[in-house]
Image (cartoon, rainbow over all chains, first blue to last red; front, side, top):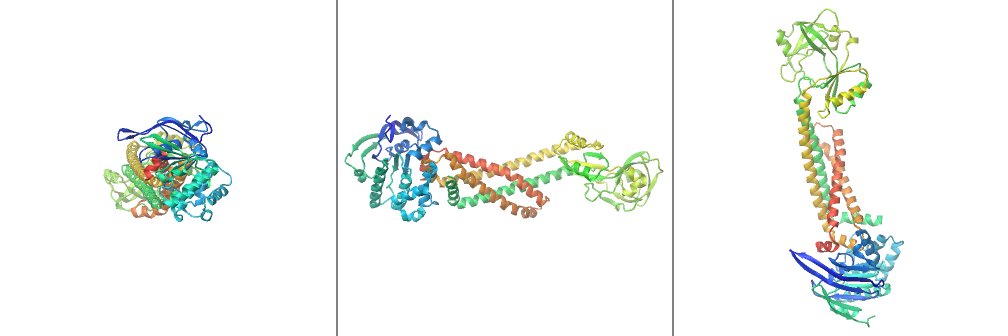
Length: 232
Length: 362
């Protein structure tokens, strides 16, 4: 296994029992994401995009195959170690902004830092919030922020630990087109700054020009791959 | 990390204020019922047990020269339900030997229901039980001659001032005053007798050993066969009480579990996110336990203030202090059940995969 890759999925299969009938969500999918690479995963609903993202990010154990990060087969770890690995190496941005409503933007961003026991979490969280353009909104609760602002807080939370890879599941799904574009540009910029990789699930094919590589999924398999070497 | 956990605890409470309120009310209701029903049924079973006792409802007679220290030592013995110190002697009535009692103190369990006349006041007054009056044909106002078994003095004459009822449970020994007894036997020879009633749960032999361990030259006499029947009845009612209490506990635990689960479900998405970003399961258990502690403590203090007036309204005889002691000891059982329910519900909830938490929330 290549130690330098951000994540490697090796012949991953996932089967869900649906009313007694097994449904193959993933069929022996192999995928490698390199550091600094922005990979978009497209495909129709039910094609297995989100399941692949969950499996690669240590959220859902595959029935077959394994996932490697830093030469570690992550599903051999117990829950405690896997949780720690997620907090160290992975960042997450979801479609629903999923911020804790009773915490301010600053406190939400501090969560991964506090889980890692980082010194000066407030300073780091403030810096990244400034970087996403929310320096003036750090003490606002999620309910006091717009959808775009909430997603920027979620992005700041995903990147504050400088993760090896950011997993984004439809991060612009609840945003209008201009905010979506702003959000994507910001995501690409920050990922590049951090030298993190990013694997993004999206329905939005209009954004594919921002990716380094675009993968298509159908019926639980990767069916098409397109590299865009010129993207920077 | 601690501050994050406290914020999560804060979030737990704020996101489900209505459920929290319902949980507190549920704890208040179930804890009150648990304590009140348990106390009421225990009172009832003790009363039933006492009503099945004979007119001499004691299990041990202990003769000794009692002082405050000895009385205290006996009172503190586990299993003792009642301790009365009486003065009595044995007398000849014709060829029969009978026991003659000094009028007991007011708190005695002895039933002194008169059919005629009144209780003894003067040293030559005597009250006869109905059975003796009938057997020897004595009437109210007549005299009766008694001679002490333990002295060689001449027979002493008493004036019959009352006749006890012949109803079941009424005392079947004659009664006089303490001074009346000293006419038959000098005061220094009237050894006081401690009459002991057990709680119906302790074994006679066990209690006898405890008495013997005190020493002090006591003469101990085990009295009753009826105690075994009382024990059996009490065991039956104890089983009933425990059964009902367990039922209340189970209903409480189930309702709390359901409420907890509903609360957890309402925060499933955020819980999923927290786990995704690296919060391990044990950290998520802590805020939930804190929440349960909070609910039970508020429930306890609400019950503490509400229980005495409710018990009074229900006509329970148990004193306020005893009732609150019941509440205090029962609370720990309740809290244990609450914590266990929280643990089970949380483990069940957290055993779901993270994507499932996301799906359930949608």
